[in-house]
Amino acid sequence: METLYFAQQLINALALASVYALLALSFTLVYGITSKINFAFGELFMVGAMLTALWSLFLATYGVGGWPVTLTLILGVSVVTGAVHGWTTERLVFRRLRVTRGHAPLIAAIALSIIYQEGTRLLQGAGDRWLRPDFTLSFSLAETAGFDVVANWKQIAIIAVTLMSLLGLGWLLTRTRFGLLYRACADDKFSAALMGANVDRVVAHTFVLGGALAGFAGFVLIEYYGVANFFMGFLTGFKALTAAIVGGIGSIRGAVLGGVLIALLETFWSGYLGGTYREVAVFSVLALVLAFRPSGLLGRDPDVFYQDAR
Image (cartoon, rainbow, N blue to C red; front, side, top):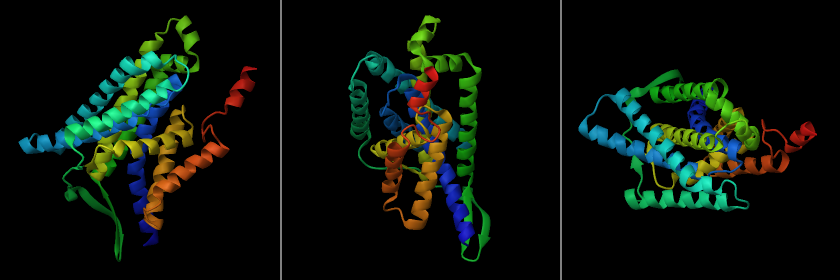
């Protein structure tokens, strides 16, 4: 029974890791090219979750298609909306502040988060939005006297689609012209501009990609947990940012690794010790990483960059 309970928690953690990994990638992609953290991605994640809830209710009311068609349509809406908002915020806010000194970009990102959060509250109310659960999709993987290991097709689909998305992102960054330009601008924007790269366009496309991943993460979370509200982006966004920092912010593989580790910690802490102090555990890990390895697990120490350059 103990082994089966462990297996059940592992399945739950993998589905949650999909959310944290996707959202952590949003933070790390933008940080890698701008060296700035865009806190508004947490709220774009919330917008994606709220849109999923609202469109699910709308399509169910009018009986549009079966659940594969419905999920595909809603996923497209969430991803496209996140991408559009990512481009808009970069064009109207962050482009003007990207070359400024000081904390103006950070303050602007926090202000955007508050605008998204309060705007959603005023438009949709402060109550929770729920998806109707479908228990017919569940099945048993293993069982013993008194305990069954249960999974459902949504969990499998979430993990599979997330893996395909990560593979697609890896191909985009390593095998396409955009990936070449992104890596060049992330390494040295001034030199990339001298070689003919349109830095503003590459940064804008990076924000589009980050917003799309945030919208996708919101879709995944509400399909898994079934509930969304206007303030969910704040805490989940900070957990995803923690995952990016733990893995090494600016590192694609680090963001995925950090998402998996934070999901495992949170899930197993809740499963074995109760859920009361799981946020304390997550942010304690963040404090330890910042104190003893600020570059993260897969990040590179700035001192090493300096030594290599010298």
